[in-house]
Amino acid sequence: MHFFFSCQCKSVDARSLSCLSTKPPLIAAPDFFTNSLNPVYLHWSFLVLHSTMLRGAARSAKDAFTRLLAGSQYCNPGLSFSSLWTEVTSRSFLPHSHYTTDIRSREENKKIIESLYRLSVDIKKIRRLKEWVLFQDAAYVKEIASILQEMGADETTIASILERWPEAILCSPAEINSQRALWQLVCQSEKQLIKLIEQFPESFFTTEYHENQKANILFFQELGLKNNIITRFLTSAPNIFYNPVEKNKHTIETLQRNYLSLGGSDANMKIWILKLLSQNPFILLNTSTAIQENLEFLQKNDFTNHEVLQLLSKLKGFIFQLTPTTMQKSLLFSKNVFKCSDQELKQLVLKCPALLYYSVPTLEERLEGLLKEGISIEQIRETPMVLELTTQIVQYRIKKLSALGYNIKNGTLETLNGTKKDFEVSYVIPVPTEKTGK
Image (cartoon, rainbow, N blue to C red; front, side):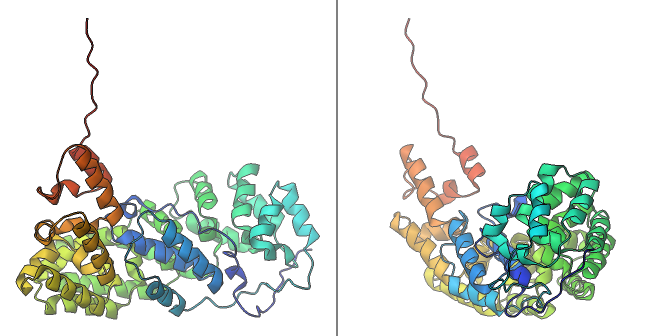
């Protein structure tokens, strides 16, 4: 007879040890977050880590955070690790789990190990990554495997899922069946669902917020979001479903109200909201107060209602992850560097929102990199969008252009701009042809 072991955790959330000694989870970020010019990418990475940390011990999460920043080719060189880490650690942790993590004086549960072994699960991998799961008094190995099999998963897929997220065996069959029914509301088929579970097992097997997840899925459907977008949210931005639905509704209402007050039309409001959410679902993690304060800051700095809407569209809602203080510092820095009037600065920001959302250390680092290449302040002022590129990308592109005889010091910086694809398409390096004689 199976029974569910319950024990008060002594120090940290038991499931929090999921990230101990592990690499950051593989996240299939949507395309709009993988553009090196997109400011949302770094925030996406940060919030994905935050979602992981909610189940993670502080020390291991910090290590994972460091690896995540250091390993990303899009990492903001001017990023202040201490400031981001302070924000991470200031967040509230989830309530303690009912699983025990104190394994010092305990032995592995042989029944669990035998059940996993019969499923061809790599026990060594679990011992190395999440050993505590093997010390629980009870688990639902056979039952969870049976449910996954019913959904169409083969033996290899089941083993892969349990190796990546062994905590799944601690969920009761009732919990998993409820999650299965819930995700089927937005998945086209169980075949698709199994693929999602294999790729994002943590998102599926996090059952603590089932009721909130259900209410939010229904709300997003009523709002007009397509099921494939909601599915993407469930896998890549699961923490927005942990909010009470009332909180998400209030945030959406705040955005709608401000959109109309800024001159947006009723006819376009729904399209605008849906596009904003699709581009940056993490906007729902902001408070209504923060949204209001940031919009008021822009208006106080003489941006017209139309210009504020323009910035919101360009920044894909990322502006709500900033604060009036950081924006003020960035604007003051740019004004001093370019020696321009308030009106001229406003036009520069509209042309290059990077001047608003990048921190002063980042702007300093990028300006310094450009100046070292012999580029003048006047050139940068004429083409401020070049500040959206990291110093490494700028150096690489200048090297490529120099090889073709292009002197960046005497020309326009437009040739440096754009995505990698834009750069390669607009400035194709010719392939020399061989001369043949007869």
